[in-house]
Amino acid sequence: MKRVKRYSDEFKKTVVNDVLSGNICPEHAKHKYGISGSCTIATWVKKFEDSVPKRLFMNEQKEKTVEELKLEIEQLKHQLEYEKLKSEAFDTMIDIAEQEFKIPIRKKSGAKQSKK
Image (cartoon, rainbow, N blue to C red; front, side, top):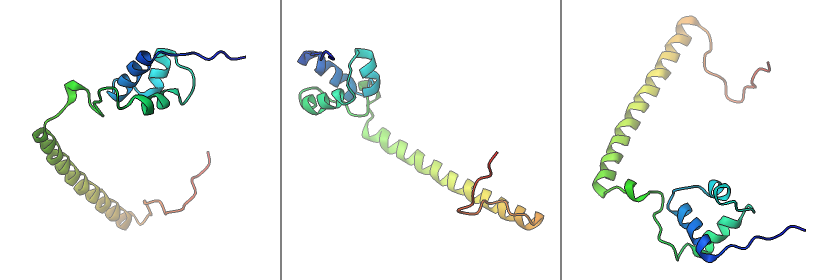
């Protein structure tokens, strides 16, 4: 018969704090702390999420100000615009190559992959 491990609330809160702060993912926490059970940590998070301090998605060192986030958004918008132009240039190159060499380059939708 399998023996059930019992964990203290303090231990559970430590694990939940690590997971919620982004220091470790639940799967790694399971291995790090030797926790068995696939849903154990998820259950603990539901139970203790209101009682531990949370820093969702970012550690204290990685927290960003509103101005930094706005600057990052602007940079991402410029990168997106550049990638759209690049994609359009590639499409144009393929169109020209298909016309010049009279061969289909683009894969037809729904086409089956060749077996090797």
